[in-house]
Length: 344
Ligand code: 5GP
Ligand code: MN
Image (cartoon, rainbow, N blue to C red; front, side):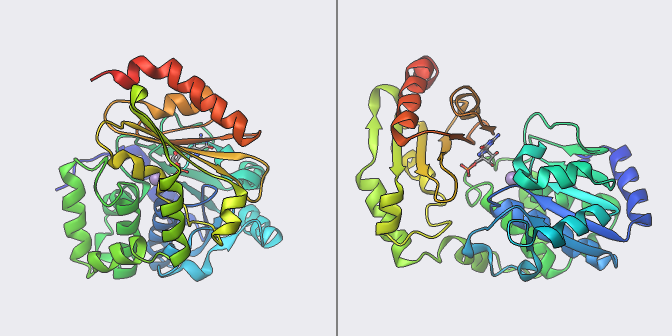
């Protein structure tokens, strides 16, 4: 049995909305990851099983290793089909906002979603959600938005309607947001949910391979390159990896090729904080990814130094400047946070 994480009042209210809704739009954050796509598609499969007209709209592209998921072909990219997406957003009865906590995280979609007269529900696990939805299902202690989608479907009383395809999407999000159940994954109920998903016929070993073992040669060689240029700061128990546009061109970089790189330095003993700085190919900025182990709050570093945020152990931000400027900020952050970095 699962504990009742989601407030009954929110479940009831969402149920009432569903009874009346015909057109439902699901939106998720920019540069969608496994949990963003998994929770969106998982929810879409469920809503379709309830005969709703459902559209998943994402701000921009997502990595190829998520393309095997059922329903992925129907996902609409806002950056490519803005007019069509604007129509769907304006005409929706309900908009489900999954895996993000503030409108800024959906980029250019913030305006049409914010202005739409649709009822909005937030299903998310990031800290400090903004109040832009009438129903806010926000549970930062839950490891993935996909897990919340599963919990919501069950609380509505529709476990029976979860198909194998729906279960695959939910499992994928749970798996990717916990690094294959290696962090944020000590809640025993996670494993109860996995057993329930397995009962739907998913092949979890195959899903692991689909997501984590489908590297291109370029990605593997790029990984070798960034690791061989990694900087380690023993006095700060930290490590840094970087990737410039020039290096991306050299290794035929495609979006998603550096996904997960930021986790690699944490495999070193005595490294509790890892930073990855990547020159963005589209916008003139440096994308910052931060990871930590234990109590070190990389979300504090993200908000204080990189205009971002996120979770205690996984967060990110952006620097609108050069790589040198980003490196300077990184070094300032190390100095400021040294006491916390060295805390045992
Ligand atoms: P990643 O390093 O995988 O891009 O992001 C990890 C986590 O950090 C995300 O799930 C999200 O919570 C947070 N995050 C990443 N980039 C940003 C950003 O630019 N702003 C904010 N507020 N959070 C971010
Ligand atoms: Mn997530």
